[in-house]
Image (cartoon, rainbow, N blue to C red; front, side):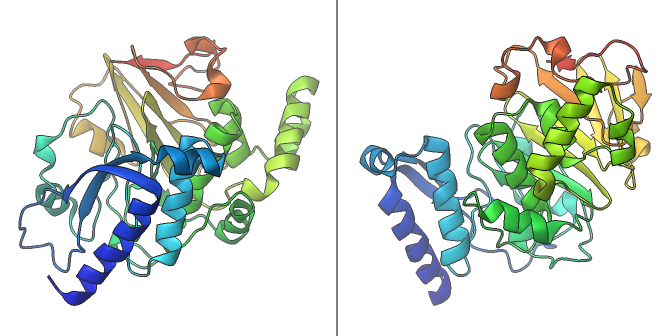
Length: 329
């Protein structure tokens, strides 16, 4: 193993040993693929926070993990954390998607929710740490488009201890969802409205109570609002949400067949996988598509007092009728 890689591994493990009890450490299972070159040293750790360090930190276990992720990404030069959740994994790299899948031996894994993205980076460097999906804890983001508000978003997030160091605008979206959903406990529909806020002219035409809520969201989360053309898919334990920018400058379509829900940038991509879907629709600008996995706990605390039908008022091809949320198995 090259000397630099040995030093990086040692520096990273010194941080992990300082904060965690490590149960297992091993190389990430991969296979040689002709199209994959210059892959970084890929290592995975199964660990839990050191109970004494966690108690003295006065943090939640989740905040403790986020703190260490930020520490490694910003302080251990050349190392980055690509996955830090439970019961989830991130498989990402530089190469064609079929090569990346073969490289990481994806046929050996199963999951209730999958998110993936093949992109050609234009405004950010193409490298393994900045590839999609971008994850933090149990949140996994893929994103098509450009977040032109990256500067103000990243400065806003720094106030809450997040550090954007990996050279991709998608990073701010992952951290903003974590801030709003996990730390601030917003309902998912309100978090989506904060990130893709309606235009002021639309807010002015809303009923008084809804108008007051939207104005409050703009006042509190103005620096967290995402500007620019984007389509985002957020996967997590229990479901997923897809969201367009507020004037739909990037395509987003959805399809459903039985208990399977798919979202994509193009309908043809879904039809290549989903034969004869029951329904295909294009979500409105700034309106989320939300899926819940039947039988799984819903991890978003702001929604725990709501029934599944109340989680969102803008979901799944319900054309100006009663709201519903897709529930899949």
